[in-house]
Length: 146
Image (tube, rainbow, N blue to C red; front, side, top):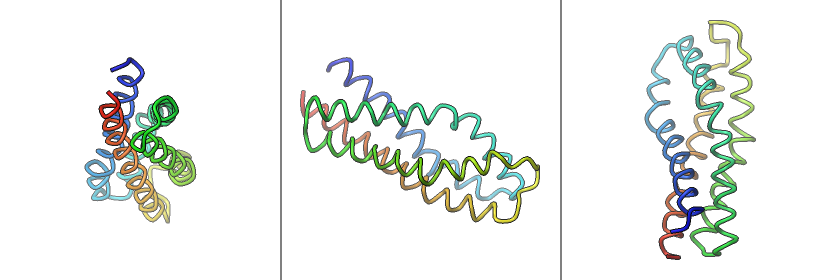
């Protein structure tokens, strides 16, 4: 396996696992908290996930596209497409809601906060599923090409 394929699998796997784990295991717990506590938690996540994941998601997409161009296969093209769609969902759906969440300067969740975050959850589940699928497809694509 070439170094680029190894790096791609590691980056795409990290992003897919982190985002899917967040959607499937972390956010269901957050939803059980009181609205004010959800606000604190979500703003905290913006300072951790929100700093690392934009770089990781972009790198994952770029790496998948490079692999699909270098070794075209249905697996790698599917991975690149899925990760590209996940990045678009992030930019169109999650980022605006994250920006609004980050600008709340009160310790009290404003009216409409919970509904806004539930919309975010739907985008999160979609993008996280696509990222996990991208990891699966790129792993199959790389091993099938070997």
